[in-house]
Image (tube, rainbow, N blue to C red):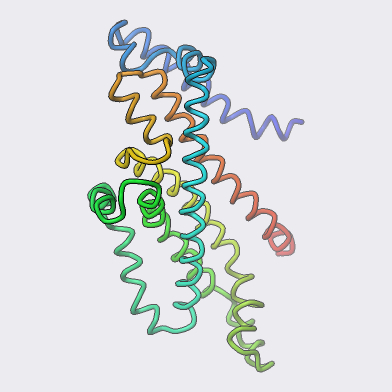
Length: 260
């Protein structure tokens, strides 16, 4: 019990301080007009976004849409990232050929690319998935490649001594050694996938209604309380997928950490 309190108390204290600062800024700094269209009180956000049945249904439906679009894009990123990382780990010439373009993808100005993606692939779900893949691919490639190349040299020598081939070395040595770094990459990319989906939804107004669409609508109509609710759900979705991959990392690597 004391251990749980020790874990939960600091973030809860920070959250309480954040809420107090929120009330102070909204109540003291802002006048009533500005408060209504910029930053309503915390309880007003809860009341209008989540206690109102119609608004709650709209936000939860948009949350579900954002979750599965981000999930599809993240799954594609994981498959592509693992494939490219494995290929680059097996041959230096492949790494020298493709790694610069992986870096290039990370440095692309996604906000400038979004209109081009829409013109090329339409403004529906396909375009949003592409945005998610572009945003979330690089951390998976770099972390997986780092993990695959970080296997102990002594273990490599032992596999060589026993005449192990590339496939055996990859699946029995390199992949197990790479799991912690891989899951770190998955955690980073999971949060980026949510961001990419929201950005895509902000620009692509067609197709399924997601949190990006809701945010755009609330901004246009100056519905600040619902806007804050949509932002809160976006953050909650990002935290949830981050924790999910953290849980998987713990499940798959905890026994090794204890052994070390």
